[in-house]
Length: 119
Image 1 (cartoon, one colour):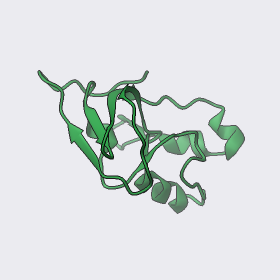
Image 2 (tube, rainbow, N blue to C red):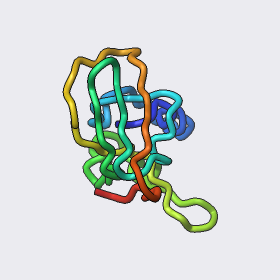
Image 3 (cartoon, one colour):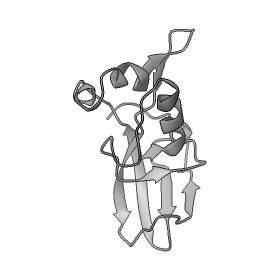
Image 4 (cartoon, helix red, strand yellow):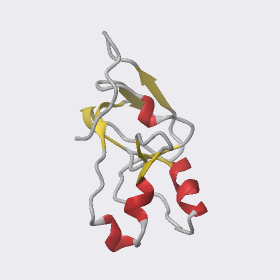
């Protein structure tokens, strides 16, 4: 999954990317996917449930799509901390039909929040 807002960040650097072009299966709007914790559950539409497993880890293959993308999706804050903008990974807990425009509800897993890391 990737946030549609990421495409705006890439566009500022002259990269025109649209939903699905980076290999993601689902594009969201208005959800900070990177702030979710490991095990967070996303209900998409009426039936589908996904469990978040971690951060998507882009590799050099993204450069074959458009040169310069890897640096943009793996950038650094002024503090030196890594910024990952390539989206998140998850597994299907319960299948179901999803459609463009379906509502996505997020649920936190029980216990202590475990930040996402690369998978």
